[in-house]
Amino acid sequence: MEQAASPWLERAGRTVNFAAMVMVPNAASATNRLAVDLSLHGYGGMPNFSDTSCGPRIRLVPHDAESAYWWGSARLGDGGTPTSGLAPPYLHRRALSLLRFVLTRFHGDPERVTVTGGSMGGAGAMTIGLMHARHFARVQANSGQAIPRLHRPGRITTQARQWGSPASNLPAEDGGLGVWDEADLTRVLAELPEARHQHLRLGYNKDDPTIHFGALTFASPFTGRSLREAVRAEKVGSLIFWDESGHVFNPADPVLGSGWVDTGWNPITHPEAFLRRDLAFPAFTDSSLDEDPGDGGSNGLRSYNVNSGYAGTPSIAGDTGWNGAVAGALNRFLRWDARALVDTIDRFELPLRLVDGTGAPAPQAGYPTLGDVLPAPGNAVVDVTPRRVSGFLLLPGEAVRWEFGAATGTALADARGELTVPRLTVTTQWTTLRLTRL
Image (tube, rainbow, N blue to C red; front, side):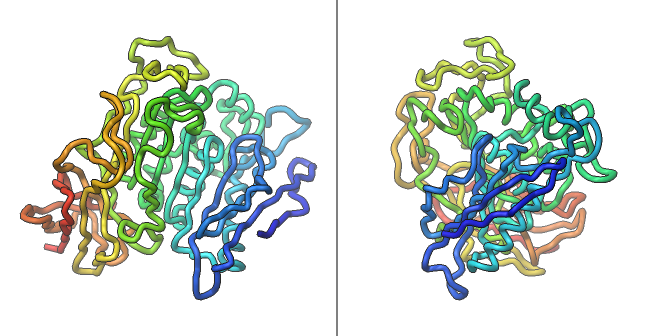
């Protein structure tokens, strides 16, 4: 373990100290590069110097000493809410600089870096992991607000002391968008190509009173899209899940418990369905096995609260006021075999399947299964979009022939040169998706 500290950070005439902690397994070496987790803490927190666990990976835990939502602050005059100047994302630069130090100094694997966090750390993980997606293989975030303007009133007030008010919307950079819209991840997904090639694992909580479930389902005032709609519309690789737990899954769902959504599947370390920054993978969308998270409306059980939305009591099953399924997931059970990937100028091949493994049936009617147990024997019908393609690159409008078992067809690349093969029937048996140019 090493602790790194910067002696000062000049902001508004003040000296701000911050720390970062790095945990490195003894096995790390120039010939055995290990995966790296960049772990971001929640609001008001700091690195836990007593937690030196890291498992088979390198952990980097930096500090947001100002609780500036892993973004940064505008310059202040005499204190209070800033009304002029810039609100630049200097905390992004600090995190990326520390990451470069760890990759170089401790032999981290640059192709297998995950950025993780919960609450403020979840928002930071999504923001850094999407706005700088070329540096990361994966984003894992729980209870993260992706649309700053949708924060509860109290958080808007505290965040305004860092960024300026939403009404003033101080620019993030010279000549750039205002910070409240620059940091809107529904905008980022629509405008930044690298963001659409990221893989997201996102968890939300229907009885969370702090970052309520509207963080997933409410529409951005800037783009008109919710986070769920943006991920779906932009065909972003993701596993999104929710239940009736409290903030950052604490306390756990009263029926499902914790860790119910899979059996420890980590796509960085999995021997078949693994992610690397330098490998293509399939983004799944609109699976027929998806549960319905709802549209952010009421199921009639509770009145809306501006702070907690329709959240109920985490210890009481079924009392949430949000509509849609009490618990569920999007793009669950879907896997690929990265070992068999073919990604050349003329051909793209990747085997796909459903996993049906260890776990348990649904504990009650209306709830999902536990672990990797399929809800019923059968298949999933799903759209598939190749992401991080390096060889089989397409021009806008280019036609492609696709084969998937006995099914064949043609598809056209969209105006961005991105291709989606619609409505493939995926079973528990490996079937190879093959793409060739016409």
